[in-house]
Length: 350
Image (cartoon, rainbow, N blue to C red; front, top):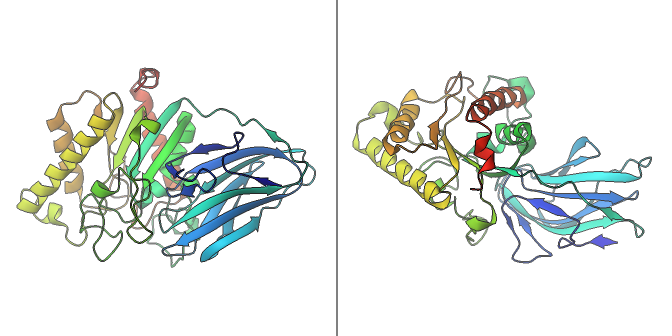
């Protein structure tokens, strides 16, 4: 029996393209579908749309995490091993990676006598993150390389479940929309995402589908998800191809970046007038002048619900991507800061 995507017992989270209700497209890391079901059989029917790397689906079935290698392209039916001794199963199928790929979800194949049961309600608290590879959990599973440059890899170590973003949300009991893309900077023509032109967060933040190499852009309806807390974690990749903020922090290029960063924060504030907004970078090595620029803009805006957050080892923690234990510590520090703002931040409807 095929459980179609529009089935009311399925629960979704994330910016997912539901233009076709029975063929939704998963784009962003940490986007998921949940299902509670009976039976001994479980298969997921998907179609992969690859840009780069090897692409994997993540899943947690009855508390055990696994991953599924997707085909380079085309529709596939992929089995997930089921504990034959359990009667009722809890599944969370999620997107491990950023837009190195997207995938279309066509449903689950289960036993003909399968019964679906109601999934636990989503948390009332809501967080949204605008970030880069660190926010996406890229190369997070390379735990033998804590504090070191990345090993050679082909996508197998990337897992949004272990991003500081999702860890923070889980620890705070919040739903997450993780608008994170590896290599992205603020401005077009900088960073590492989508060469040779390079797309910046300025032109991706308001989209569902955004990668110029995976099809036409589609805009997101912000009214579908209004977060209590917004985290803007941009400024890490902006030093490529030129670290002008370090070399000349009062120069023309630095001034242009600050102008655009301020405008971006103002856009987010316009979209979410009541949300708490937290500006930050990460522990991945970068020049301190980027954080100083963010602090300058934060002070300039004089917004009582706008904060600039720094980790204890901000910009100096590692030469490589953030591994699981590092992301865990980052999320602890970020949670402590968010908790210090008081429970009332979650009580006001944004």
